[in-house]
Length: 211
Image (cartoon, rainbow, N blue to C red):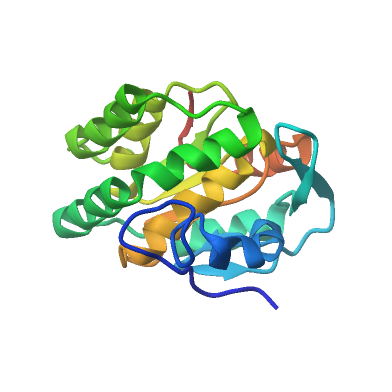
């Protein structure tokens, strides 16, 4: 069963109910398995699985590479977010910034610095021009550039395709988006940067941004 919501505390951390607390990790493998489309966790149409590993090599779960049907579903659902929704997103990201840093550390072995996370937050709020389309990131993408792409993307509707090395971070971001009650379709996560997924994404008429 795919979970339809995330549990949140006041601060993201190790406590039960936090963004990366016990409640989230109890079903992390299920949430990793799903795609986030139109405000909900969706069972993928595809079946090509990629393992998600911690920085120690521990298996955390798996993601399923999106195919043409997954991409078509996400594209059809795209909707822009207005200023109020973008403000809610920025507030939610700030509220759960510690958990987002931990989500990166789980797979990379090192949490971003406070300055790097602050740059991401600032960039989200500073992105005032809509830039809808598809966002492709790498495991070493600059957080400031990611924040700007996220902020601009949701203003027009964005599909994010992260690498498997950032699957936990992408899942955490999707949880924050869901918590912020963004317009359904303003943001989607389709795993992962596998050849079949990139081929399906590049076959759409949407603009593609790589960072």
